[in-house]
Image (cartoon, rainbow, N blue to C red; front, side):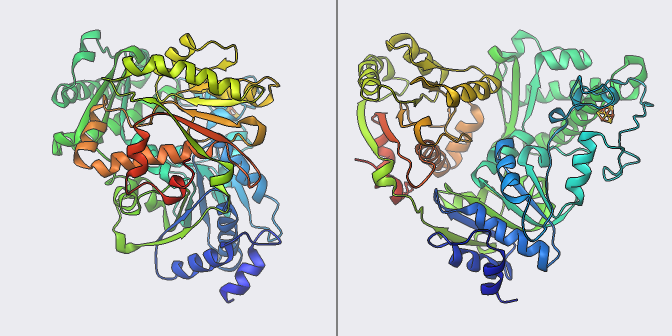
Length: 528
Ligand code: SF4
């Protein structure tokens, strides 16, 4: 079938948005010669319709199976509700982790992470609903195993990055196609998977391993390499003497997985110690050990699960930098770019309300000047909902303490953030979220957010040794990350063609951003 005919047959809507038809054709043709394709398309272009056309065609005509990867569970649901009942009978299935299902054996009183099979300490427990043998496709109807088996059998498995990256042991198999939505998140997702988080309380409870308060003063990789070797020994002892310690099945899975990861990391750190960095977080009771970057991990951990790949994002910002940290070469990647169809300049303007610089040395002088400006903006948007993006808990606390209003809402954990967002969307009040990490993964259209204050430019935190080392090695990466966060932040309040959101910037460092050659023209044009 010619690609024109393919597009007419498989495009899921009656009409095309500007550029969609040409882009789908371009991508289908590129798939004949390339394994890696980037679709860099702005807000409102309709990237999900592009993905659906390609996935439906590949399943129906080429008999190819695919992964559709998203960065959040909310986006998985959104794709599933759009795709599940399609006229071509392509089998889309959603896959989620254990904690999202209720245990049938426990009469749905607990989730499958706390299910009877997971609490067992003998390794002989047999649940009639569970997996039969080693293949999840054969199961007795446990809600968790059933959805996993169905996803493995499906034409298109809709998964989130964390789930595929943490699949252990590898149940999900090699597929023909992988569509990677919000692909700018890949770097972070793989870094979270590769980095080792040593949680003091968890390790003590799991295997009795002690991290002392004085250990948090140590930032040397050599020091922590010795700690890892000691921990590896303790984990091995618990694996060998499993029955002596009476661990549950869930604990044993955690111990085995952690031991495997630590063994790998020890040999990688020994091979190139200068590539590894330690971030002790005393107040959060954890230490994170991570590599300077993940370019050597993205392919083996993620991309090698499929033959052909379509990366989709509205904020690639810097193609060469993006490709480099995927561990790919420029000449093996096909790049397709499309403009946003929204009138961002008119409906999503950025207004400079500079109060000064908020760098470490300047913040004490600048902070008092910001409070009356925030009060003025709140008063101008009386009766409307908004967000203040602070980029740190320190600035969040200062604003709440010094700005006089009863409209503020905030959160202290990701769970609280989810609950707060639900409340915020339902609320009739003109609340304003004072946020330190809300530039991505939330959908707040129309009256849900009509104004935003970008309080501080979201530079990555240089107090983290790994981020500092990565910036020193590649200053372009650091600026790319900052601009990407700003572009994402601007997009939070503008979710449809007729949506409207006004953005105010208080941090005068913004001038340096919009003068930078990496800053997209479409973003600069919104500044008034
Ligand atoms: S396999 Fe059985 S015991 Fe285990 S989570 Fe599923 S229903 Fe519960």
